[in-house]
Length: 120
Image (cartoon, rainbow, N blue to C red; front, side):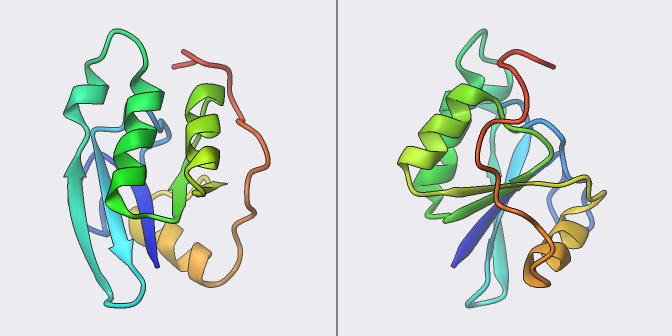
């Protein structure tokens, strides 16, 4: 199973970005192979509007079945939900820390968006 993490970096020591739609990158970690890929999110980062929706579509295309991020707005949350992607919010500092929390079962699946659209 693949899990997407929001980040500004390109490895597991990179900070977890608190923004979903405007995160510069996604790290998509494959739990089965213990490998990851970095997906550039620059097109959504600079979008005048619809960044969350575009980012959600990018995550869905990656094959991820879960997303770990700081915050997720309502439009993006609906797209992720429709794609069958579970959302987990965390205050973890790094992608690696967030991954460890996920593996340990210490993250709770979000049932709704946790911020308003255009909050940041």
